[in-house]
Image 1 (cartoon, rainbow, N blue to C red):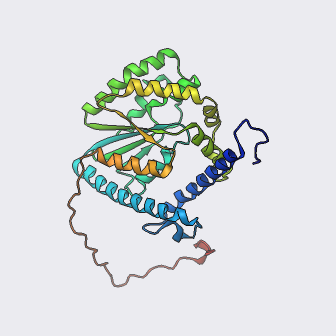
Image 2: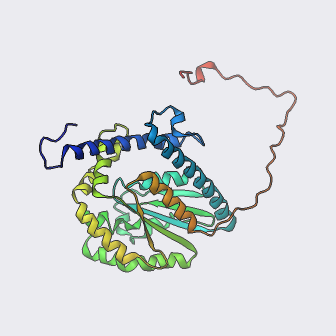
Image 3: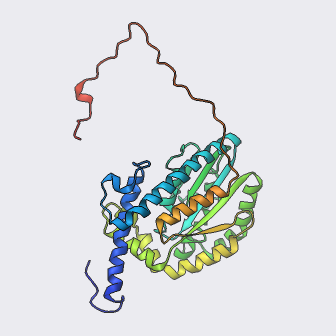
Length: 311
């Protein structure tokens, strides 16, 4: 990646800022993997070199993340105990950080209680169904939370911008979705809708970081690249969506997402505030003694079956 030779993209200072943004994005990517392994240790204890001025902020981030995840575990117990049903929608531009927030929410939870629904493009058969039909089967039963990584709002976003639906289908969606969501709420399903908002400049940095990170290049699809070109079209579609589907029964909440870590913490903290959960009483757990039987002998496993100890 070479520095620009003209002033069309700003000064050399702007270029240095861009490189710094990419560096931080790459470091953030490695944080995501560290968070899956470490518990209450600071990020630098795992051997990741950090500038001294960044270490306190990262330690504070990890401490708060783990505190909020402990509250999510309490929420999970309450959901199971009360039979609560919740649907949480995550929408936003490509690279806005939806997946990272979802990962932090589900990281410590039981996947049988808190499920993620990330539907692929509809099949030829599904395109002939009632638009909401393929989403209905993913709705929660009692004691479940379902997180939609993109949702039925695809029609108001990517389908509208990319021309995958016509004007009649688009307008019918806006007539139907408030009634659909009101119906779900009347049936006892709580709906929480998040829009992750990032700036033009931040999306550019994240896309460039993905291009230069071999572990994340797979995240850039031709559709993602085209969405970058159509930034203004997506803005108009987003504005129409928020205006026409922000209802009392299922309001939209906008998450400032230029800073990924703050966005995750803010989203989780807000999510916890939306549910009247409390800590549930649990019976004391006692580990039983293992039963021993005379004559039992463990059969040896052939050495050829073992995975080699390379590490």
